[in-house]
Structures are given as C-alpha cells and as structure tokens.
Length: 160
Ligand code: NAP
Ligand code: VY7
Image (cartoon, rainbow, N blue to C red; front, side, top):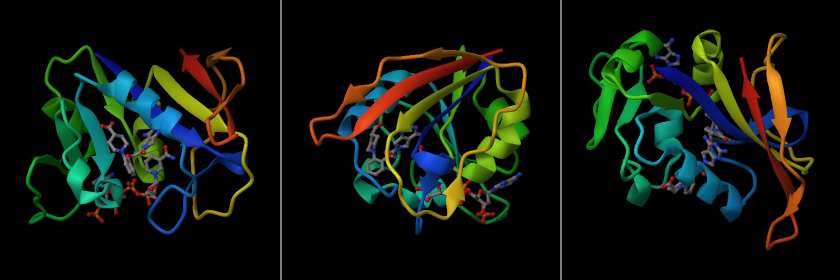
C-alpha cells in the first residue's frame, strides 16, 4: 500500500487558519477530489470538523477519522485511534490518502512514500503549517497556473 499525503499550502507552508483554509481555490478542490476519489481518506478529527456538513463524509471514499476520544462517532465516519489503526482500517487499498491536518501529516509523514502539494502563491496569516519534508525526496514541479480568480498555483509531487 502506498501512503500518500495531500495538502495545499500558501507562503511559509500555511495550510489553515481558525479551523479552516484561508483561501478559496476551486481548481485545487477539483484536483483534491480527482486525486482521492475511489480511495480511503484519513483525516484528523479537526479536519473532519472543518468540512461543511453537506460534504461529510466526502463522497466516493471511505472516510477514516483519527481521534483520541474513546466515545467519538459521526455518521459516515470510520473511527481510528492512531495512524496505524487508520491504515489498518484502509484494508488492502492501493493508495491511502492522508488529507490533513498538520497533526496527521506530521504523524503519517514517516510512513509516506508520496506527497502531493499544491503551492498557492499567496501571503496569508494562519495558525497551522505543513511539516517540512526533509531530505530524501525527489520533486516534480508542475507549471505555474492561474485560477479563474487570478490566484497563482502549481502542483508539486514528491516521491521517495
Ligand atoms: P488535525 O490534524 O486535522 O486534527 C487533530 C486531531 O486529530 C487531534 O485533536 C486529535 O483528535 C486527533 N489526533 C491527532 N494526532 C493523533 C494521534 N496520534 N492519535 C490519535 N488521534 C490523533 O488538526 P490540525 O493540525 O489543527 O489541522 C486542522 C487545520 O488544517 C484546519 O485549519 C484545516 O482547515 C486545515 N487543513 C488544511 C488543509 C490544506 O490542504 N490546506 C488540509 C486539511 C486541513 P481529538 O482532539 O478528537 O482527540
Ligand atoms: C477540504 C472542503 C473544505 C471546504 C469546503 C469544501 C489539497 C485541499 C485539501 C483539503 C482542499 C478542502 C470542501 C472540497 C473537496 C470536495 C468536497 C468539498 C470533494 C487537501 N490539495 N487541497 N481541501 N470540499 N487535503 N489537499 O478543500 O474540503 O473532494 O468531494
């Protein structure tokens, strides 16, 4: 099984603010949906809470939520109490996607062989940052693109 991480980051690796994502980039949401469709997704409980209710669970994917709370449950969510439990819940899927947030990325990074980063060319305040990948990764950089709103972004794939 491949363990893949996927996030979108602004300048200074900012990925979140006040429990949400501090920009709107529909092109990235489509990229996220296309990448993860048909595969299990693993997320931290705060990221589950950040999804608008009408998108929970994310359709077409087994949604596995990691929490330390013994009594936590939500309709459409499979509960796991560690990253290892979450990967076991993913069964024999080819790829399991860790979709955030920062706590989950940090916990899953040692197990990951692939990271899909959307770089957003935006300086924005936030309170949550993506982890630094460290050495040993090979990067493939996509071309810079411009969204319908005028925001510049590109897709970068890291493999090891
Ligand atoms: P998070 O990683 O989504 O969730 C943290 C929670 O996960 C913890 O409070 C705990 O839940 C549980 N948890 C963490 N580590 C655990 C472990 N080892 N074992 C068991 N449970 C564990 O939270 P976050 O780091 O604060 O990230 C949320 C922010 O990131 C939001 O602003 C969100 O919008 C943003 N985000 C951005 C992107 C992006 O691509 N830009 C993607 C996803 C999320 P309990 O408290 O229930 O025990
Ligand atoms: C998380 C949403 C958040 C707010 C409103 C709608 C990359 C992203 C994430 C996480 C962007 C989100 C959504 C978007 C996905 C839709 C459902 C509605 C779907 C990540 N690169 N970008 N993120 N949804 N982990 N990595 O926007 O979701 O997939 O069906």
